[in-house]
Length: 303
Image (cartoon, rainbow, N blue to C red; front, side, top):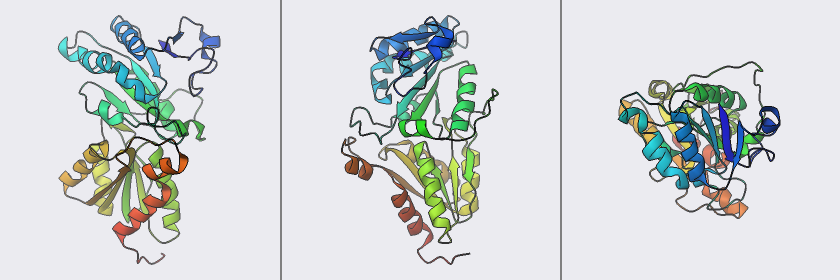
């Protein structure tokens, strides 16, 4: 296993996730590269095919556009096209999302692109505990896994066991149990939804928060079970709502015929750099609260 990406050595990565690893493991296993996402992905795919297990880092998820051919047309297809005789055990880690004022070219949420490609697994953890367990599972997987880490979640604090552990891919997690409505949220929106649920609880509205954790594979049965319990589902994603993964989640619930469904997602606009406009372009705690109240009705007795 080795790491490869821009500034991941001495600098420790764009967001500090690989800090100290070059000093511990050496430059042969922690390889800083030029600014060339296509080269990073190409090396990762080729070396994975020869038996190594690369973990490649793209500093911003926006620049997956530069590596699309290697990931979509090569990594995702090789196992199938070679009838299982070849495998590509690589992991891509990348930082996505808004909230840092990084503007239109450094703030996108493009996880839906990868989730649309057969042959790729797509993870979107929302807590420190989840990211470690999912990353361990991703590294052991025999074929490509894309891990989307939200920029604002790097500062999230939570319990993480010292010992190694794996979380199964394709199993959603109920972050908060409730009876009146289910929020299905991804990435940073899980934390915002939990904040909204706390506020709503004080008003007598009991919200369940479900985190898919992995978009591919998706825990369809787990999400449908929560929807069947509460009968109302609000889907909250940061990504642009138009043609986004929120539509897939809505379809999964609608096809089961067990609940009313509504989506809340990003505005159909390039991400602004100005803080107030960035705030308006993405779901926030207050907009989640308003959407829940509309769905359950504003008259709700405090229990």
